[in-house]
Structure formats: C-alpha cells, structure tokens
Length: 180
DNA sequence: CCCCTGATTATCT
DNA sequence: GATAATCAGGGGC
Image 1 (cartoon, rainbow, N blue to C red):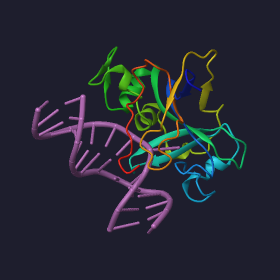
Image 2 (cartoon, chains in turn green, brown, cyan):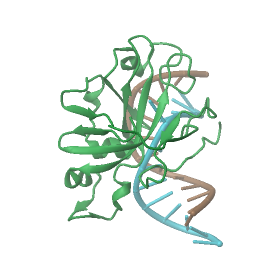
Image 3 (cartoon, helix red, strand yellow):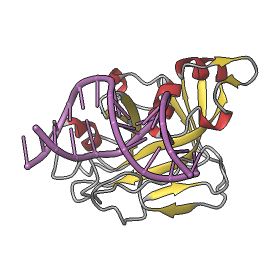
Image 4 (cartoon, rainbow, N blue to C red):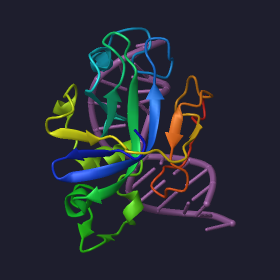
C-alpha cells in the first residue's frame, strides 16, 4: 500500500507510513479476542474502511485486508497530500495560499488523526467499500521500504509491523508506549 | 529539541 | 475509574 493514493472528496493522499493489525490473536489489534466491541468491521470482507475514534477526538482509517472472519487491517498512519491542498489544509484549520499558513506541507497528514482529518473522515465512513466515495490507487512500483515496531501500542510492542518509505518527511516519529 | 499535560469518548477492568 | 493504534500547546533547555 505504501506509495498508493487514497482519494476522498477531492483530496488525494499518497501513503508514506502504514501499520498492520492482525486478527483475534494480535494483542494490539482491536480485533483481539474476537468480534466484540467497536471493530466488527474488521471481521467483514476486505476492501472496506474500518474507521474508529481515537482518544475520543480523532478519527483514524484502516483498510480491511483479509477474508471475512480473519480481521486483519492496515492502519493509514501518514501520507503526503498531493491533491486538494486547500480543502485538506482547511480541515486542519490552516489557510492555504499556495502553501499552508501555519504548518509545513509534510505535516498536513502526518499521524493517523491528522491524516483522517485532512481526508475528511466521518464516523459514518466505518464499513464503506473502496470504489465509491473512497478510492485507492495501488502503487505501480515499489521502492525501498523499512519496518519497525508499531507506534504507541501497549501490547505486542516489539513486533515490527509498522512500514514506511525511508526519507519521507511526512512519516511520523516513533513513540513507544511508556507502559509497554 | 525535550518532557508534560489537557482534550474527549468508547471500551475495558 | 482507568486506559487508549493521538495531537497540540506550553515550559524548559
């Protein structure tokens, strides 16, 4: 998925950082322990967005990737806005006059909450299938990819399931959960 | 740059 | 009552 472009409502974001969340046996996954709670979309068929509320105030998006019942998904952690800059900057609370006022370009969609806001996510988008109002252009070629532990998770904190394109300034900084 | 804290809600204990 | 797949803003260096 790295290098692919997620499109919604005239904004396009090229993904530079993602994280894999596995199914019922991944302690860091919302699917851990089975289909209970908010993550039931993860257990549905692939190609859907799983949208969840993070820390009460943010919305983050995953792409469901495994067959129904397996519940693995990929969190869209960061990207580079490549189209619809004015809309995306406005959603982040910045003015746009050729460049964002008050924020550097690579921070418009850095971090899952910021990416969700720039993309214009709504809670109602949970479960939606790609191909309608959300599109994803898969990358035509792959360059170098690096991997490491997932950001902020308190369990399974060592598993190298975070992937990013090295050298991209829109990639977020790694933070280990202090209780991990 | 660093560390600390508040915001805000679904889920878990 | 506490925690979390987070972020912004403040103070200190």
